[in-house]
Length: 474
Image (cartoon, rainbow, N blue to C red; front, side):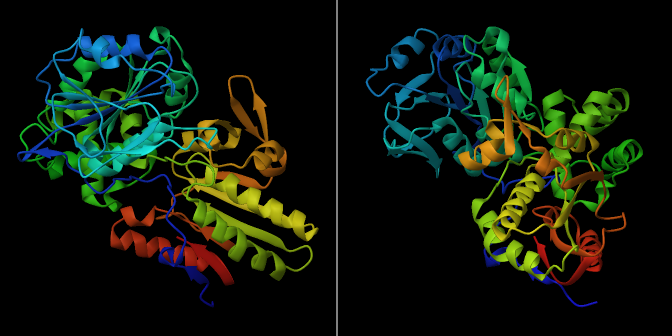
């Protein structure tokens, strides 16, 4: 069989998030050789009361830094520092461009600014007045995830809209901690509800309970900051026991995954559960199906959204799909495989591009997109085709109106034109037989987390399934 055209990601197609373990390169915030958590706090309407309750219960020698990103009116003169000083002994700073982040301090974003963190410095830019929608919380959370990785913490408090719901995905993906205010205590529940709907929140609690959770998490023996030396390696026997439990329950052999990727995710679950050692945690997952499922989901992650990585989809739209369609004979079927489809966003995004190209060409083509994953709950979600506003942030308004129906509560239902093009099915790229006679395979950001032997096996299966002159997107 002839070699398909393998599209190298370095040639302009960035990697996509598929549902495998995903760990960002480890970022570290260090002060005098000691690591510390940096906590980004997003708040909007009704957020002051939540912030007061949060800091009222936070010890002044907590060893963390807190960066507060609040939606502020351009004309509003903030008294936030004065109001918070009544509830905390932590140092409070109004951010100036280039300010260094130190532990045991609070940093407040000024009005009319957006902010990121880089090199442990807070960098300010003027908010673009021409942009109708500003998402300063998402912007900061993303930069925080890139800056300190596993030491990042995102807190979402009261507010309207969905700001923060995209940024917490980046925090979760980097191995950080996500805490959200419960809707019952929030004056405005839009932001907390949108954050909870992402499925990546580790804790959903009242603001007064958040400090205790943070302190317990940061002081856990496995915490990166506990001794400045990082966590001790997990035992081989303990990891083998976890592999057996996961294999028996889900049929997935995580021993094929890179050891560091898996062990760091397991350590994170130990911290969240306050388990003292791996044997203790093994006993926990043997007797607690919900924690076993949480570990499974953490290893697979599945953080994605529609048209994630716009440049990749633009390249596919212009350079990949039209030639594939032009080659097809009348009555011939276009066959696509999205391997590791998570909750379906990538599969539906490709379906939109294919449907649009067929309309431009004014020709009928039978299309079948096989969208597969090892996580059955994700497949059930994808099959339902109902998504939050946050996951559709990259969908153009014209496409949103054409391919989605809005329902109460801000949720969107995928159109039947797209749904009937896709078959969602469980599949393991390492051990299951591949689909065949394929024109296009998309497998993005999955293989890099597998060990070399598993990578070779998956690639050989992809190659076997592709037709001559077809395309593999990695």
